[in-house]
Image (tube, rainbow, N blue to C red; front, side):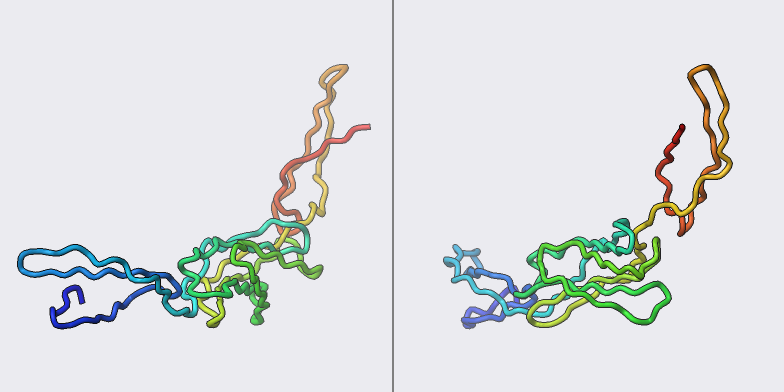
Length: 194
């Protein structure tokens, strides 16, 4: 309670955060006003609890062939709720029913890379990232769709042609490669002559 009867000499403070150090002061008041606060109590840490805040900004993608890169925004220290804090990364190919689970024990981590030769380029995965500490496993994020790494383009541009412009210049043109899972995002072309 905000105001405590003058004959009461203790109170229970509620809605504190787990695994956080607090100090307390007591202030006396009467009909005239409020007095000076007491000196602070000794530091007291609340008990640990299972973490309840999941990482945010789950994303990723990119990486090399046969890789699934997953990134997230780390959970701040005041929301870790205890010792032994880490992350649980869960993922599965889109449409699959079986989750793969990995544990990332570093508090500062914000990335996990899964490597497997069976991953085809630009495959969609359902991904969620959760938290844990010594008290147990906490909340998982909502599901995000992340694509595995790309491979080099598997098809050549079509329709290559050359037009002589002068004694020292030739214009080369071709049809662009359409984007799909087998070509990835074409970032550029290389023109070779001999």
